[in-house]
Length: 182
Length: 75
Image (cartoon, rainbow over all chains, first blue to last red; front, side):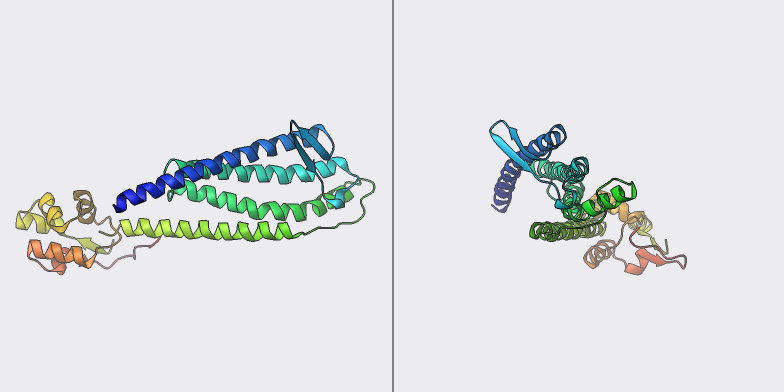
């Protein structure tokens, strides 16, 4: 009975993982399309069939289209990498691998991306401004950074995910140790 | 390895096979083989108790401490 319940719950988790994987794949497609749109057209509204994606760059780099695109592209690439690792994590869950080494590593990488993306979002524009200033690009004479609520939330959620991944790694090590005690 | 396991010696003395002992103790032959070669992190008291019960011996007959470099944990 317990075994049946476990199998039932495992099947439920696998189905949920599959649906979430579809969402992550949709996110990957949209993110990829946005990245292509970003370089094929300036920042602003992009029409992808029925979809309209509005891409806005950091205010600090307003007026410098290529620097703006560079900053946005780096953040988008980090986000796409995170989505790719999330998709891999969900594929592991779908195949019934819930506590193996691979899902833990995917979760850790995804969590790290959630921490890195807001940090890039905040720190990249001033760093690009500094680089541009040192490179002698006209019109950039100051550095500024913007932090909004979503950056803080991303950072906190990413930190919590990272902590969970770390706990899972430790739990796995404890289980391996326990298996070596006869 | 400062702790030596003399389980194979005791098995030979008592003319008991690994398979018989593993069945009595309730562990796999593979784990018993690992225990014989000392390739385990630890032994449960319950396992030791069953081994001593079946082989009619003391834990000291199975384990020996030899002074030497300490085994590093978490390697």
